[in-house]
Length: 280
Ligand SMILES: Nc1nc2c(ncn2[C@@H]2O[C@H](COP(=O)(O)OP(=O)(O)OP(=O)(O)O)[C@@H](O)[C@H]2O)c(=O)[nH]1
Ligand SMILES: [Mg+2]
Ligand SMILES: [Zn+2]
Image 1 (cartoon, rainbow, N blue to C red):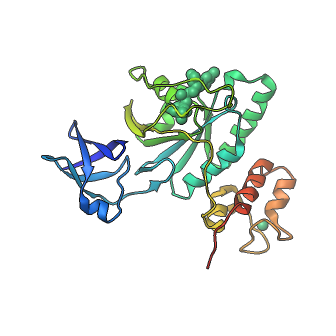
Image 2 (cartoon, helix red, strand yellow):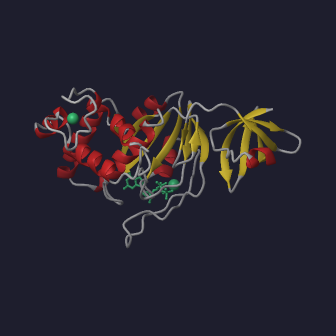
Image 3 (cartoon, helix red, strand yellow):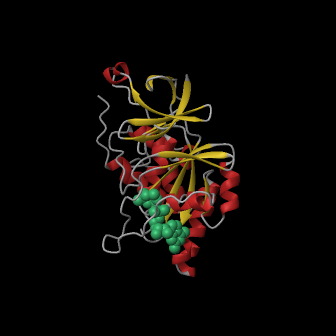
């Protein structure tokens, strides 16, 4: 039998197949080969004793959150509680784009900021849209539904940013657990503990446990560079320019003239300078 993994709780996988759910374990062979199934995997399983025999070839796989075969990663970014963190946003974009998954940015908690702060969020939305990354807010539920239509989607973002709340708003039949952030810590309290996929209108969306940071230190700097998609359209004098110490550098010129967002460039430098990746 074939099916799709829709939930994983401590290595018990819920497989959905022909409208029925099966609680499965991986076979010894999979465990021996250190193949770990993840939510979103299409699997071959034995119906009688509920063992996952094989994982079918994956279209893609994302790490943090662990999930396979998604079309879109919806990056939930709160502008307050927890505070707007553009470095985390650009790291999440990098993490998703390097796996060839389409990112969509969704800003949340706009209702908690001042008009002046909203102007900054508008500027960010315009910038990301301009470079080809769809960016919107959770105030526009219809637009979100339109963008996610017929796709398999994973939610990603900080704990407390509003991932589970968004699913509840997308479809009133859901009542996923949500909790206010810790005022003392200024961040969420890891309310969602497991990744689980839900059918919402005409798409599938996976809720995932949030986190506060993401580690890209072992990613090749050239791959990181390629995920900053607006840099790719720029021709620098040196073909392999890292837009760092090189002079002249057309990317730096565009940052100085304000065409490339300064936070994007600064975050890029921060990510590659934190990088431990060794080529040899
Ligand atoms: N004011 C306001 N509060 C929101 C918004 N979206 C979510 N919240 C609140 O933010 C808190 C955290 O939301 P959750 O949906 O639990 O956050 P999460 O991203 O699922 O968090 P984890 O499961 O820990 O990763 C809850 O109290 C929500 O009611 C929003 O747009 N505006
Ligand atoms: Mg949650
Ligand atoms: Zn350059």
